[in-house]
Image 1: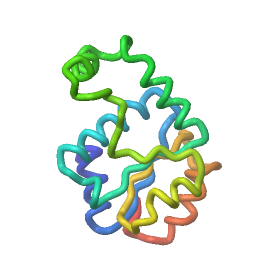
Image 2: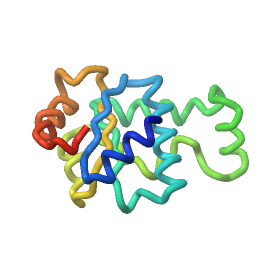
Image 3: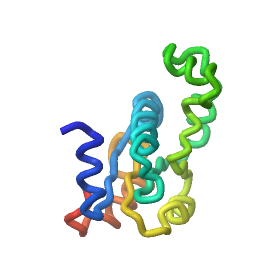
Image 4: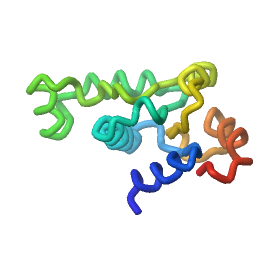
Length: 138
């Protein structure tokens, strides 16, 4: 199964997905992949997609400012007036638990990318503890 198939299988059974990610680098690729998937399948009203961590807003602001260093297809997307590739209109970017709770307050199943490559501290750990007792979550 691909990542998106696995995520969707969990969300469709009304579970939540918690993905630990590094604070930069690959998380940007995952955000772009998942945001584009959400957009193609029109999932934003059905499922929440969030990125949480203390430096998420700084990281995305920096990534947005580095357009000239991105792969050619991303630059072309910007040049053809389809918008900035890291606008991420389907992603709620949260730097605190209160922001996350507001973003997922609709009760929809949620996929959360939690900065920090392990879930031993921070918001990722808080979500792990909160969601661990539900066998539908992953």
